[in-house]
Image 1 (tube, rainbow, N blue to C red):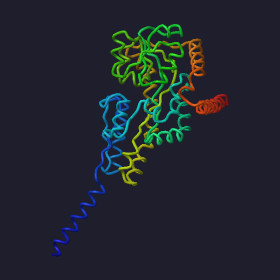
Image 2: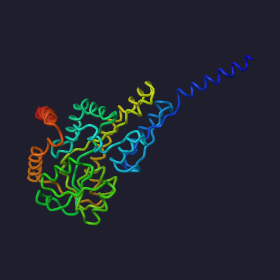
Image 3: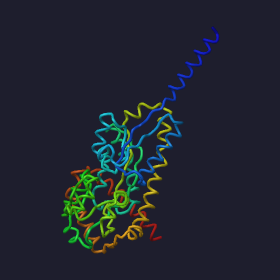
Image 4: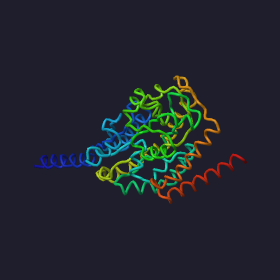
Amino acid sequence: MKTRRLAATLLLAALLSSTARAEMTLRMATVAPEGSTWANLLRSWAREVDTLTQGAVRIRWYFSGATGDELETMEGIRTGNLDGIGSGGMICERLAPSMRIQGLAGVFQSREEAAYVMERIRPTLEGETRRSGFELLILTGLGPEVIFSRTPVRSMADLRKIKLWRWASDEVGIAISREMGLEVVPTNLDAAARAYDQRQSDGFIAIPTAALAFQWSTQARYITDLRSGYLTGCVAVAHRALDRLTAEQQKQFRRSFAKYDALFQEVGRRQDDALLGGLFQKQGLKPIPPSEGFRSEFFETARSARERAATRFVSRATLDRVLKLLADYRAEHTELITR
């Protein structure tokens, strides 16, 4: 009898232990191509979560748009087929509308400016994301928008003569480009290369790492490093999924992504420096350095477009706050340079 009771007690203990450590898999998706820098970092993050939770929480990533574009992926999350997304910025803007500030051409003129502002409005972005039913885990700069083209672009006149691809999900970027008098051809990511080959478009407005990952840099012939804007991406998970984790698992889960904010920024910066610093040129792209006159005309046109259209996308309060933060940042760094 004692032996049977002991066996029953051990079995119950084993069952309780198994339940406490039951493996849970969070299903995450992204359009980032398999093998890209983004995909490698996201997979590394998944391994760290696995290690921190001793296998109790695992993340299964679906790369290369396997679950569709970002809007289709969001639908998959809402129907319960997925738990979260690694977004190239477009879903981030839908979950946290204040992030639409990044789609206004010419607001940010360096990666450092974008990072400075986004970090200071992060509590606002996190609050907006929570109200959308998600937790904002990672918020990171993805890089500057530059122009990859079939023909040289040396002036606003050149820019207005060609048809430029933009990501169809980028509502703000498309609207502002058109407000600036540019002809834009929006498609999904998987149709961008085909649109260029079929001469439906003459170039791409894209960040360097995207041009590399999707191989647009092998199609275009010229690159104009105008840096018209800076894109910020994010990783977000539905609260419904996080609620399935224990309090300790949630703590470990949140610990894991803290360092990846900084890691994404640093890796992205290094890759941008390499690509724009000569790697694209070695691959056959001819750089067209924008003249001061071109830059001045472009950013003045962008400013006028923002004044006409910005409040269709972000509140006046958000715009004023961001411009104030930028003025503070630029004043501080001008002082440091002149000392």
